[in-house]
Length: 303
Image (tube, rainbow, N blue to C red; front, top):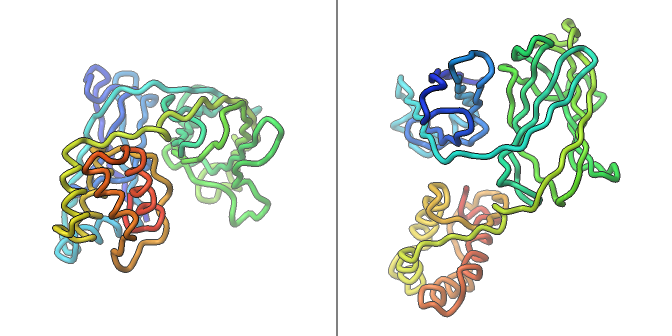
């Protein structure tokens, strides 16, 4: 089950203009950026921003806020504008007259988990709602990087209910790549509406990864690391603090995907040693970041 919240903003309102990055909060808990779908196409003078909150995301929010939140009968939404972004974009056309525009934040590159924004349009340039689609990405030598295009009719693709979707994908190498997009049809019974069904392909280039190498750790974090390394704060408190700072952009490190969440917070001694050495200036930010990467990869810190 998906909950939908829609907010409209005049295009003249600079804080919420097209090209802005946003942070979405549901009951004060930050949600994954894929929850936010930005539609600058439907209206000439208005940007429409959709909150598409899945049941899984609601369960995560409940889990973070605790039992007292489970009986709340209201939900609050917050949309906070952040920095202006520059985007790469290209368009592919289907024989049916439909088009798909694929865009992404140009600061992402090879090795990053890139949020690709996919928008579908009819022959008049209107958003194509309730599109059931799939896609496949290959490198220039036709080696497959990702595909959800299959032959099982029960397992075909993704539904882009508003004609907009975001799919995160890691492109390993800086180079030219190919994408094939398949429109299976429209609506829940998409086989009954085949007007825009078809296959189209395009070529795009991914630049060097910049976000993957970014490390930024404020000096005041050294105090926390020093207290933890000397046993003045617990493993759990240290992990919670680092997790909070990563989620809120205070610490930027090239983290890997989180593994399975740990049932207890037990941090290896070598990570504690790293923190102590870093707090006293004996090792670099990069060396300290390697310990944070380990905590993320092993599910001790969840981001």
